[in-house]
Length: 121
Image 1 (cartoon, rainbow, N blue to C red):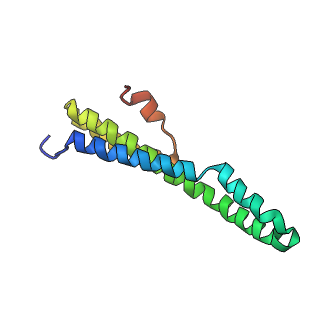
Image 2: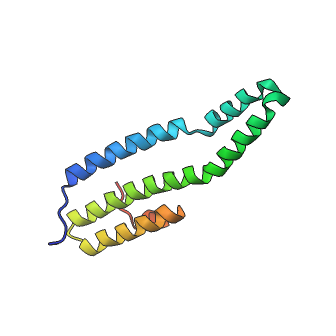
Image 3: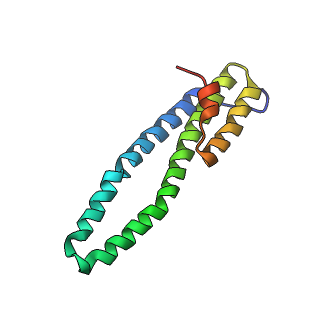
């Protein structure tokens, strides 16, 4: 364990802040809010119809990017939290495995590893 220098309480504080910010982001980026924007653009009929179509195209295009951001936030918090628990339990190799798996989950959105191998509770 000579390569690691982790302060678990500090890590937990950062993870709590990240989760709170992610929750705020999720509340702001709801499908209902985006639909409300699109509905608001239909008031002008043919005059604003192209604007609504363009905004819808941008939102559709960016939905994958927003999903990727969410995956990275979730993977990061899960991976770091599990890695710190493993570190605290003296399981340095497992801590490294969690770091590797968090990168995979961030890229793919597949959190199966954490469901099957993550710490519960």
